Image 1 (cartoon, rainbow, N blue to C red):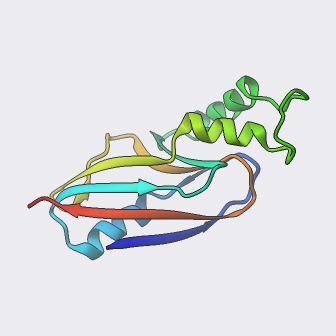
Image 2 (cartoon, rainbow, N blue to C red; image 1 turned 90 degrees about the horizontal axis):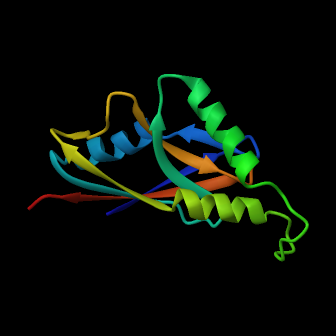
Length: 133
């Protein structure tokens, strides 16, 4: 079964912690052991895992993405959001997490983030739970 989650982002570049929504999908499927695949069907957003304890980490990440990937006159894409496409490609559009004991296997300080690079927008995240057989 494929679960679909909708999120409204509120900034041009934003990292939205969606860990609890993904864990809710695992809970709803009552899977004790398996694999969770998370996919973002957008070309200007991505999915990533990063620290959730210190908000400065996400601010640093946002600032560094902007520094490494600024808007430039030589981009050929005419919509003006080429940096968002580049950032999304670098971040990636899918993520795999293991499930053990009915819980997502994440490090102590890790969370799953929807990475917005062309917001604010309505975004969708697809989740596929695959139980071990």
